Length: 190
Ligand code: SF4
Ligand code: SF4
Image: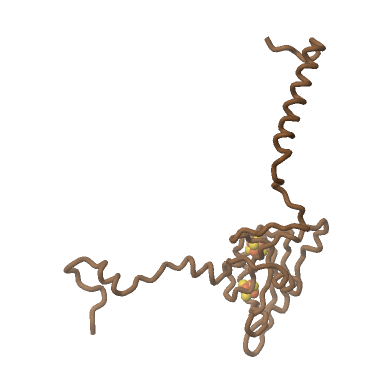
């Protein structure tokens, strides 16, 4: 029969000693093990290959020009509507006159990256922007470019992701083999 707490002084004392003993056993078993935590931010772990963190804007590596052409596709696709872009029309190409991103309301869905035709907006391998002040997470164009230079970019870019999703083209020889014997070729010569 189960004994209620407070029914027996010696019984309660035995339960207490047994609980302390079990807890100390766990402590002793873990005393010699290597820690699984690191002293962040002094020590940082390598991010996984496919880590997608804070958003940033990029420059063209060859010309040094901003990659953003102000097309506003990212603004249209963004579910919580946290991106605002104003286009600046120029002679050879267009730019973003204004580009703001409210990171505090971002869902990190990556849709903006997926639609960007010029790989101008990307995600970085970092989450190191924690703050207690929401105003610090209202990012303007300059800040987004600075973040793009500050952290390591994620592997995913709009063009890279679209290439991955495009079905491979069947080589002509394999296409001919796939046709049934005796069937008319799908493209008639001449
Ligand atoms: S990741 Fe998603 S929610 Fe965040 S800015 Fe891009 S489209 Fe908007
Ligand atoms: S970041 Fe990309 S999608 Fe957004 S406005 Fe610039 S070029 Fe267009």
